Image (cartoon, rainbow, N blue to C red; front, side, top):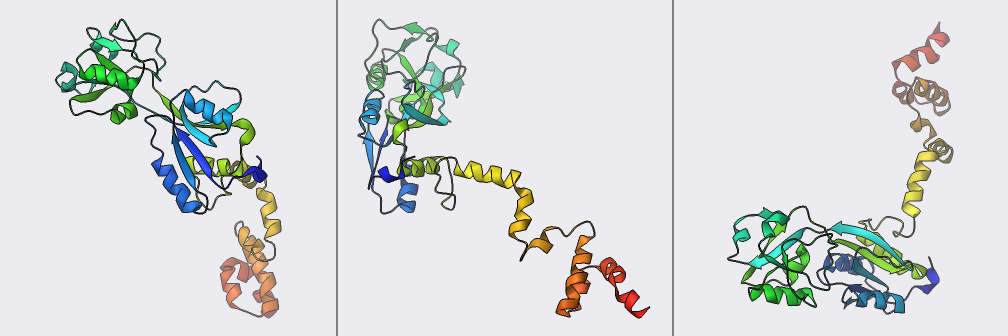
Length: 275
């Protein structure tokens, strides 16, 4: 973490299909004085931007195999097939890969899904991009399997999509250069992880460390609160009556005796004084 490197603005890249608006809104609420700029990028381009320092962080699709980048997985997307509205699979809510055996399944070069074996019949050529593949689907040349967010991104009135079970799924992650984990990056990590504004700014492992402290240091807590809360921390096992009885004579209050409970009051001293 390099707090001194914090820049006056935050640059966030994202690949097609990812919608960062929710996190951007929270950023503006929590850090209104730090402008956040969005940078759309292709799946290949985003890594160049991260390495060159042109952006501070970016939403990417896993896997991230670059050793110089850190990444936090965020969510997994459903895989769907994009088909013409009059296609037979449009009549059901979900299908299996075997239902596409008779279809030409297009395989774009920027496909984010890691296939061991692509379903259906394969086209002679691979489209350059998912957008190109969707255009071919609209032309009646085949179908294409994509993460659901990409199906929404390339939505057309003459096309629809259906869930496909038992297929690879795309996982979205937040990535940033490992050697540039600035305070602003830590702030954004806290936002995407859902930390509240009252947490320790979401930086580093501070929240986790605090939780571990509270578990392992439970015995030390009474020492901090002896002045005001020590007696209140151990009210059980009959000790409350003894402590209350010891304090009441100094304060002269009889209400404290009642608080200590009937047993503490009876055994603590009144019968002995009058007996």
